[in-house]
Image (cartoon, rainbow, N blue to C red):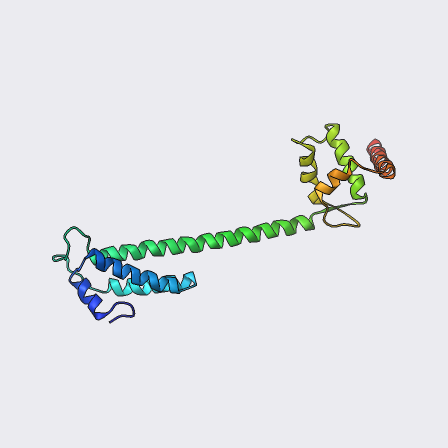
Length: 196
């Protein structure tokens, strides 16, 4: 007698007792054991034990209970194979999702490391980006897209993480001093270009 199958099971399988009710009974018993196990590795281990026990049993190919039904050993073996494949695929998908999550975290970490620090304030940067969009120097499907694409890669001496939405909205209510600093900054850039 094995871990899962009883002596009666062995005898019925040996005689190819391929009753639909008996097949359902065996599958229900296996499924109940699987449900009781929380870890997928435990489910796989259990299925391998059942598969091994079943595979070691002899079954008659000459006699059967129901000529319209498949051999009981073959039917149960096929169910175990399909269930095993399903659990294995499920494990692969879980691993893939974990890897994707790790990749996203790595990307976010890389993004933080690669930020460019700007000496301007968020209001001043916002003014320059808005002017770049409205003058069509920066081309995107919308001004929102301009801010969304550029701002995550920027930081200031005061702030590491900048909100592109906040910067965009503030660019419409900038103070005169911010405008002056933005203009002077652009003039500095022009002077450098002239010296090239």
